[in-house]
Length: 291
Image (cartoon, rainbow, N blue to C red; front, side, top):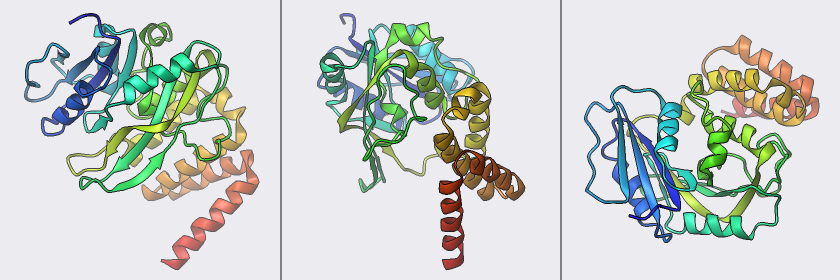
């Protein structure tokens, strides 16, 4: 195989029933020169896939976590561009080709990375959410700027970025078990424009084969605290969005039964955005009353 244009990283651990779909979605890309770099993060049974020159399997003898697996894959990748797909998700066939075309056509300040639309679907194919990405020039702060109409920030999994730039920024922060891509984009956007693409390219599956990290309330709360500690000045300088995340964290804490901490998170949210936080509290109280 010639040197691929795009390497797609697929960290996996103990999901042999789901992994093949993610890998096939890379091999079915309309962009011909791609490789799938599967990082086996210490699975109990070694990952085995049908032989294909476009598939490379890197096995870690012990689990080192999602961020470490991505860093290993980044170093092993041969493509100029990097993308990722979770082992329980899939890319649509056009995603990589459309992403590179959008980067090439973009009039944003270089360097430029791309973000695509994302769908959440049930196992029967029912779509439960459809998100389109924002477009942000270099020097912005992804997820902390005002939300553009019809756009949403939780499309981070769709990122296509130059491998050299990712390495220059220090790779993925392995301290983060959750919100890993969120943290990376906070470092990336100040030095790289993000071109949003008005087309769905990534499908995230809601399934029963183990939990998604993003639905683990305790993990997401801990990751949020770590994110704020690392980027505190950035959050505090974007008060309304910081308040938005504090309200979301309060909801997580409430579900975890930690109501005193939830109240403290809301008190902080009031400090940064009193009007929206008051409206949010009234709405939550009304929902609980109507149950």
